Image 1: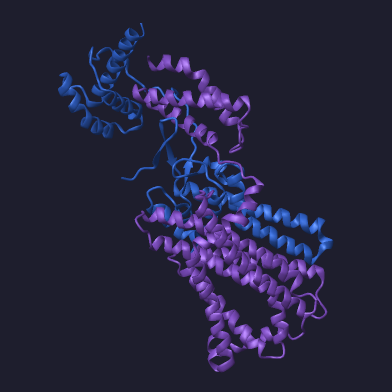
Image 2 (image 1 turned 60 degrees about the vertical axis):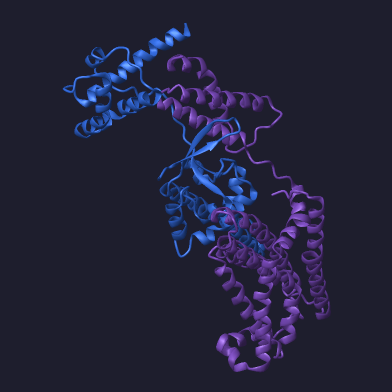
Length: 332
Length: 249
C-alpha cells in the first residue's frame, strides 16, 4: 500500500482518536464502563498497529512522527494511575506506615538515638557544668526562653491565639520535617545535621530552664505535644537517612535503582511523620498552653508516649509478622 | 550518546518515543507555576482579609496553613488531578511520567515534589539544574528518587511540508532502482531538509551521501551531489508507487 492510500483508509480513525484525546481534560479518567472508553481502546490499539506498519514500510517521517505523538498521548490517557480510594488512607495508618517503620527499624532507631542522645547529653551537661553549656548555646538565648515561661499557663490563652499558633506550628514544624527529609539525599548528612542540631538545642533549653523557677511551666507545656513532635522529627530524620544510605549502599543494584527503592520507603516514613506533626500542632496550639492542671498535662503526655510505643513498637512488629506469614505483597 | 528521546515499549507491543523536556522548558513551566502560586496566595489572602476579617488572629492561623499547603502540595494536587501536569507544564505541553512511560502515582508525586527542597539548594535550583544536565534522562534529584521523567507531549500533523523538487530533475531521474527502506528514508530526510540548508553546506553534506549512490547506480559525477540525491529520491518514490500498485492489484 502506498502512503497516500494508507492515510486515506486510516485517517478517519486517527482523527477520531485525536478528538477523544484532546477532549479529555488532562488526566481525567474515562469511565471504564463507558462506550467512549472501549471505543478509545480499539482506536488506540489500531493506531499502534498503524504506527508499527508505517515504520516497517518506511513511510515518510512526518507520518511516523504524527502516529508516534498520537499514540504517545493516547497511551498517557489510556494507562492512567488507579484511583485513590479513601480506604487506602486508613490502610496507610493501620498497615503500611507501621510496616515501613518496622522494615526500616535500623534507620528509625538511628534517628531516635541521634536526637535523644544529644538531648539527654545536654540535659546532663546543664546539671554538671553550666559554663560548657553556654559555650554551645549562648546564655542570653537560654535566659530569654526562661522569661517566656515565667508566667506559666494558669490563665490559659485566647482561642484566636491558639488557632494562629496551630497554623504556625503546622507550617513551621512540618516544613522543617520535609526539609530534614530532603536534605537526607545528600548522603544522609543533611538529616543528621538537622536532628543533631535540634537535639542539642532542645536538650540545652530543657536542661537550663528546668533548673529555674520556670522549670515546671516549661515541662508541663512541652509534655503534651512533645512525644508526637519529637518522635516525628526523628522519623523524618530516619526517612532522610534511608534516602541517603540508599545512595551509598546499593547492594547489587544500580545506584539510581537503589535510590528509588529507598525513596519508596522513605516517603512513607516522612508522610507518617507529617501526620504526627499535624497532631502535635493541634495539641501544642490548644492543649499545651491551656489552663488545665499540670497533672492532666503530664498524664496526657504519658498516654501519648504509651500510644507511640505501642504503635511504632508492638503494632508495627505485629503487622510485619502478619505480612510475612501471609506472604502478602505490600501495596506500593 | 546524547539523545533527547526515550523509547517506551507499550503492552501493545509497539515502541514509541517520548521527547524529554529540556532544562529551559522546565524552567519556563516552573516560572509560570511560581507566578500562579504567587497570584493565588495573594488573592486568597485578600479574600480572607475581607471575608474572615473578624476572625483576626485565627484567620492568620488559617492563612499560614493555606500557604503551607500551597508551598509544599501545589504540585502534588495538580499532578494528581491532571495526570502528571501542573498548570505551567500544561501550558508548555509537558507531562511527568514514570521512567517506563506509566503515569505517576501519589507517592511518586509526593517524593519528586518534597525533594524540590534538595534540588533548589544552594539557590535557584542549582543542584536540580546540574542534575538535569548530567543525567541521561534529564532528571533532577526528585525525579531520580521517584523514578520519573518530564516529557514533551507533541501534536504534529503530516503531509504539510512537501519538498520543492525541480521538474527538470524529475524528468532525468533513473528508472527501476531498488533501495532499502533505510536508504529511501535517508534520501527523504535529505530532500525534506535541503531547502533549509545553505547551498554550499548542502552540497558538502550531499557529497558524503552521493558517492555511495553514484557508484551503485552508475550515475554521472558531473551532476551536483544535491541534484543526484533529489533525482534518486524521485526515482525511488516512483518505483515504489509502481511496485505497490502491482501488489495491491
